[in-house]
Length: 135
Length: 66
Image 1 (cartoon, rainbow over the protein chains, first blue to last red):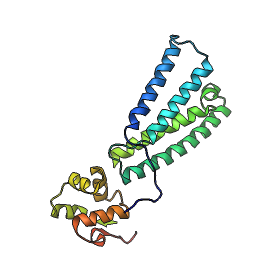
Image 2 (image 1 turned 180 degrees about the vertical axis):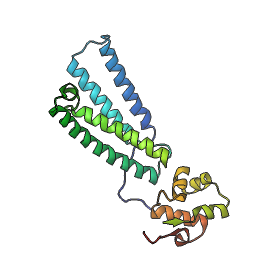
Image 3 (image 1 turned 90 degrees about the vertical axis):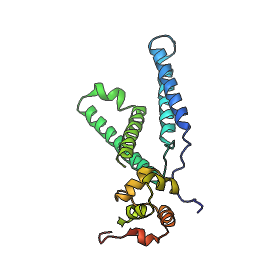
Image 4 (image 1 turned 30 degrees about the vertical axis):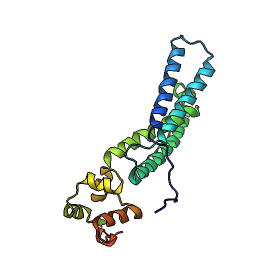
């Protein structure tokens, strides 16, 4: 049966290595700057680091696992939905924390869209792994 | 929804892993279907009926609350 129905078009499993590679290189780049081995403007370093982390997490989230089938696709969608809701809760919680004066947490983190996106990806991976173990 | 996959698998003397390989899914998916944690798609149900040589209606049965 030709399968042309709606569904997730995921990347092949070898993209996992590419995603992990980008993540490791980004962390290395940031550490080189943090330990002053590399001299660069802070704003540029943060932009490159955030972009690298988000791109690597995006690739990893769209990569097939070795035993990908219709059940894992369903679990993936549940994990995406929960992570999306979690992102919304993070923003609401951040706004409340800020309004109650916890500015030291909120100013740098919750106003930063990269933080919310990265936290959503972490929620996604955690939920997906948990659901895969439970299946 | 109830299913008789475990029984059919025993009749055919197949392990979950062997059945999974025959229809191209993971062993965990077969386990989830057998334990009613996952209802398979029509395509997968038809593949299962083909492997066991029975009708889909003989493999899956609706319950009153379905």
